[in-house]
Length: 72
Image (cartoon, rainbow, N blue to C red; front, side, top):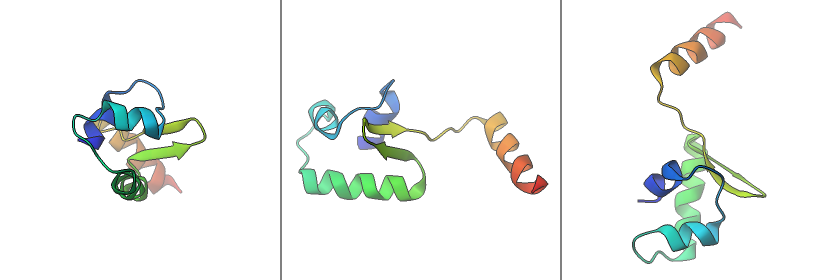
């Protein structure tokens, strides 16, 4: 639910905006735990402007990342 809202957002959104866009009521503490987990997984980035979805499942991008890691 949180992942879907973040993935569909074009730009970084604040936590308050994220809470408003969620289809059901979510407590702020629960949202903070979810965001912490997603940040640890490397799926989102939390900055001063808000939360941004950074995960990319493009196969070309995965291949490029694997090649760049192997080169070093």
